[in-house]
Image (cartoon, rainbow, N blue to C red):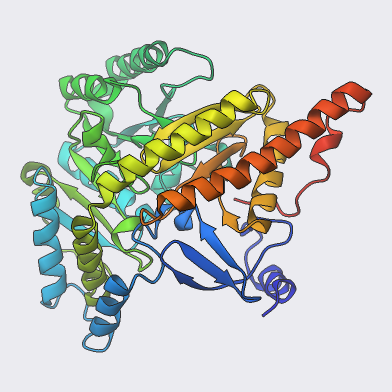
Length: 446
């Protein structure tokens, strides 16, 4: 199928909300570890990993073999029947994350967050929630209500008992000052309505919000305030979980033990699976009969077990921490070389972002589109996020190596360097300042 044919079918049959990256998009047909290949046979090094999903690599043989083996043995029964893979997976996760010995399996990050919010309501017998501005927690009704990013708030009738407080970040603002502002707002909400609030939900790193890391001590201080009012803390680890930031969970890396943690994406390595886990006390509140038709089915559970085997055997969290330092150093050099374009570099491990034109985000978004397009043409797939979609996102499979990082940085330097030279020529010639970003790049990506 050609790109034109794929685009035509999508336009004919997809809802109009479904968009894509690139003015000239490839049709991807195969993958192997950190690489994907298009229908024309061109290979790309993937620095986005399906938004952190294939952390263990595309079609990793150690994982794919487990998936295929289970598919040929028993594909589905639903949770009302006993199977070994889901029981073993629950046991394994409790061993890896002893603070969360109880788990409920589902199918996606949205569903995991929805379940966690419902569990918080059952446990506290309260309805309300607290969330951060510019957050993203899902596309179900309740998770959309606690989402603070305007572009993802698709429900025209959100839940009316959600309290948004400022995220602890502002460009050019000292992180601790931003943290104090957010914590002060949290205190105000708790004093006003703490007895009506079930939980606060937080991404340890706001992925779609622009790779915003919660400042040192912020989560622990927020947890202490919440505890005073009997309000639970939910750590949304959908993007950060299972090694990407340098540890299995970013919340623990940032110094807090949440009451409930949600997981998906990397746990399945491309096979849909989600989970929310909690302490014995909190989990005991979800005690009326329930089931999940597909959650933790034999194929997804067997795959997740193989993923966890691979993460442990290959020490992927340590690898992400080490390679993330190298990638971040390279991006910081880019910021030093091109300060007019690259405003800030943020993130932990192999979850990094580089914001372009923070003081002119509309221009930054156009330049980000151009960078993505040219990097694709050079054989590298990177992502974008942020409030204005002007943050380059680097979330590669954790199996990339130093050579991949060096090659990508070399090409990125060539692309941004070329844009910078055009910018300088435009300044010298007195041309309109927007000419060098050229035209729009087709459909705006999600």
